[in-house]
Length: 328
Image (cartoon, rainbow, N blue to C red; front, top):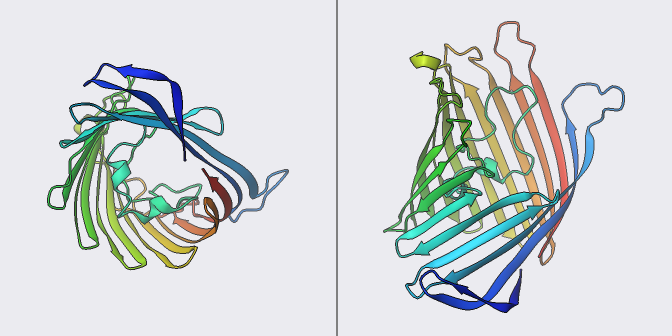
């Protein structure tokens, strides 16, 4: 990360802040190779391999007012030249308030119990009707506001509200309550999202679990439920339950090892997809080549079973990922 002090002086008329503007510039670039084999024969020019670029440049800064409030902001650009995310924060003894088009405080604080969010390529297949993670939904590029409370005797509350805009009623509201002590952290969260057109076929999600760290070992386990209601007050049409667990080991200098397992199934008997399920396992090796330079090797195997009588959507996806990244 590099800090640049601008030549001009910024006078900010909020809480009496007056100081030269210091901007932090950080970023990363990754070049990756992926081989994604779905078990079907390729025809024509189709094949399983690809190269990819992933880059990010982030500008950020903060100021503290005479009243003790810290105002921060950030703006990130990705390798396509588009805005990755942007937002501001206001922090004090009361906690932190955020606003912007970026990850909300719920999504930003539930990773301790969801190992699937650590995986580079994700858990999925082309035909899967279930979920690749137990984590609750969050649209990083959608405008939202949120709040994180201070840590009070190990307890912390996170809340976010996402506005889908004037053409949709799908304004997500999510909450997460966590408790932490002696290496163990537990949490429970809920998310409600009305159907886009207001038909009543709303989405309700819950996620509970824990993360535990002992020495060089971190273990995560969580269960997520994703329920879709029926339009016009009718019975629910889907209830997907996802178990998400794994572990990370960092006891070898410069090396990290991890495993992530996801088991997801449609549990609602009345659903058109009842009994559909996916089992997926990812293993990864992280190697620190030099400070700020990292190599990632990851292998993911996903298997989806279509339980519909006579169903023909069974499929698999085996993905090999190799990525070299540089951070600054």
